[in-house]
Length: 461
Image (cartoon, rainbow, N blue to C red):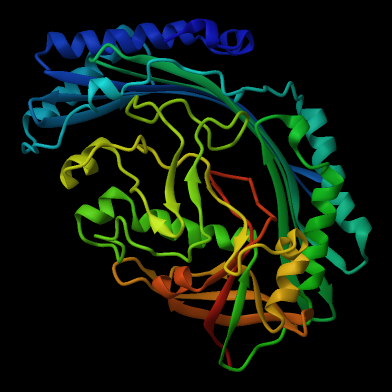
């Protein structure tokens, strides 16, 4: 590991040298006990979480966590153990426990470390560490201001589930018997608010949140509270629909779930078990030609960025879908071995998976890719703002989930909709993608704008 790339603040906040020393001690002990290979993951984290409800402080939580885990290999037999104690005795006990487990497990030819030549050779500074020196009193004031903004926006905001402010900082280390040791520090901060709008006996709840690596990149707390209130108010007087076949526009928050289903369907575990409807689809068109999906793990300051994965494999930018054609899977070293392929550096998940804005009809006015433009393009159909339930069968692609949102006629929102189900098959949903909006939501590992799907079944009354 290049310690020069560690922020001075990170070194001051966390005892990274202790973690390095302990990781080396775990690996040495594993070797002494006869393990043919071993890998260690460790982390140190601290944070503050404050919640205010109806102006009163509900919770103040400080956390400071640490942990080490080791996996040992005796040939192709594997055992793992963890500890939160960092004493010499705890290190020895943890390694002994992992070795004892390995001796009683069955051999699996795919057990082992990721290939040595795929280890990250350098650890770039991705600007992921921006600590927030936030005192509890300041966090309480911000949470109160966030919640107050929601109440101030409209008298129909009658109750609250609270405003919250969170800040988290951590340091992650990975080392293995290839000789690789790498670590990096990260931060994540958030502001959120959930409120209830009511008129008579009718009530609707909604929320909003902002999250970022740097506190300066968060939305202002009053905007978060105001947005939560606006979303709750818009849902009042919701109606049900009769069953129909119509275009469906998924807002970025709900479209993210569709993209996550795509990731699940091309993940190695589902593929080698033949439990995915996209098994065997590498090199085949699964989206319209305009669709471009890529992984961008080295975006500076992004929430999904990482210099290496959970096996020390260097992350890299790559296309998963180009011109609608599936270019690659999401693999760690074990699933890659099962499939006779090479790891894609995705042990632990994807890194800034991003779908580009675009449309099936080619060049269009950029305004048409904004939220309002997509609604006009849809003309008549359902806007889905919330999805509920787990009605997705990955093996077949069958899709059916509860939904709420808005009904659109003549390119204009007419009224809120509740207690409906949107249904179809993920194959048809992906192929029926008409437009991807430019209203990209960047609050996570999966980054997408709204999705306009040509047609789905909306089941209601």
